[in-house]
Image: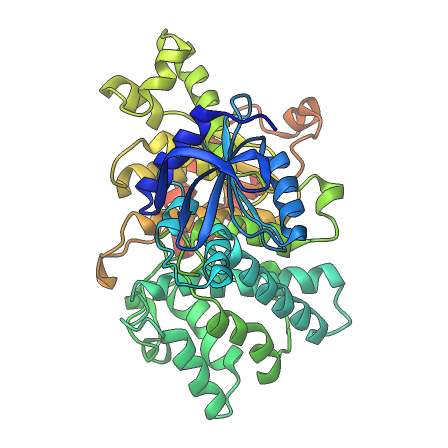
Length: 487
């Protein structure tokens, strides 16, 4: 690997900004002619190399095998990305954009508190680079809970039905963890855990005495329509949104005893910490981590065959911004590069056009691209609840063959709406939009001529029903959905 003084100086500047010791004039690192020493984080030396991320990872593995401990910082002009790797086994390599000084990896590195121990400080740095740790822990917890629940459900049901039923309950519980983290469940950030423990202590069935009344007696009903028993659950917001409507799979009996609910709910309530905001540096699961976690949990054995792969946020953002810029340039008669640059600070005409865009993801998966489109079309600045609501309810559409993927996409869109109303008291929370018309389970590759033949020639009434359904709740939403299916 050739030595590059310019890259080495940029790495020394980066270490200085992170509060670490930096070399003013880089010097060759002992025993490594292809690296330059550019500073240190406590006792851990930091080396600069000109290399791609893949080359950096390979070099880090070779150094780890030799017992050489240090931090590699690598840039390559053609790669356009910066790689960081600690030479400890197992080697983890973090990759960020060269100009992204607010990247989570760098934020975590700045928090490292070195001590006199070379190995101890190197372990801290390795933990800082491991930004996916919270996601991996959540995956392991959810995977184990899901498998245990599927095994405990009646064997007479098909395996995929048992899997979908269990995943639906996990989805609801995780969503409510985010809701309670803001104090929106009776003002208690430990509401679910304390109520669940009370059920177990009293030897009551958590499904019958807690989750069913919570899901179908409070969260999907306005306070004035709740029974006396439901009101005893405390101040619970009316969220609706479809997530808390009975699913067709829930018709009939799904006997899950207290022990079964413990296997399903206890890990989610006790082992996973969540937050609507944050970078995940404190180990809490954020909404942005959910997509990656659920893509692994849904059907891990079928992911490769189905083409379900995680797309990094930076790639999602770049693709979405390019697509939106091309569309708006044609629509407004502007240059594509000018539109792309203006997305960072849109003028009134562009901002209005962004709100009027419609986006369809025909293979929505866990919703990464719809979330990227939502954030792009919302524009920079603080989240505006009304603008978010219009985009989610009327401008974003997704299709997927996997009903569970559609459910996860809906959940992530609802969480984004909740992010926009953080700090509001329970009484001021508005019901979430019904997404049944916007997010559908189906095959987007069906013959369009056949599909067109099956649709009514006058589609205006069907479109009107879709708009009504987006803002309808409760009984009205159910009645509108039935009319749409008949139409």
